[in-house]
Length: 117
Image 1 (tube, rainbow, N blue to C red):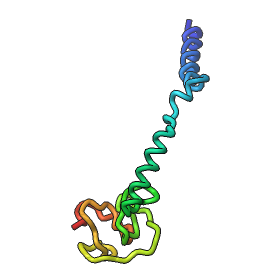
Image 2 (spheres, rainbow, N blue to C red; image 1 turned 30 degrees about the vertical axis):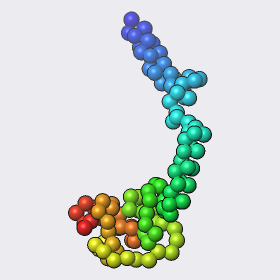
Image 3 (cartoon, helix red, strand yellow; image 1 turned 90 degrees about the horizontal axis):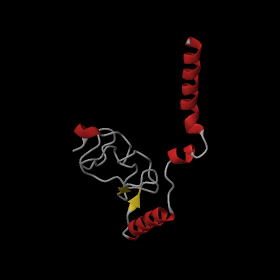
Image 4 (tube, rainbow, N blue to C red; image 1 turned 45 degrees about the vertical axis):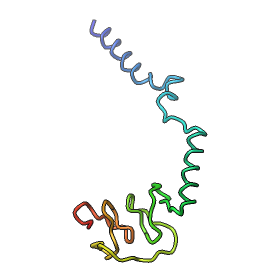
């Protein structure tokens, strides 16, 4: 009797392990595919932003000001020549910080809620 229970439990465990690997199961668990419509919509949004003179972070897509050196959302270095402006200062580099910025746009220093002016 004990061997039969062991055999049944072994089959159940093997089934649990093998079930996700069955043909057709992997496709249902994968990330949904991006459609052509999704791509066209994203390209249109980028073109509209560019036509308005907007700048977008290459890493996360958040808009940034022309003088920014680093993205305020993800801290990624931004392309192009920048000019440092004045205003409430970053504790690390002294550059302007806007309300809600999580990172300094000039040096990439994490500002935190208490440091932003």
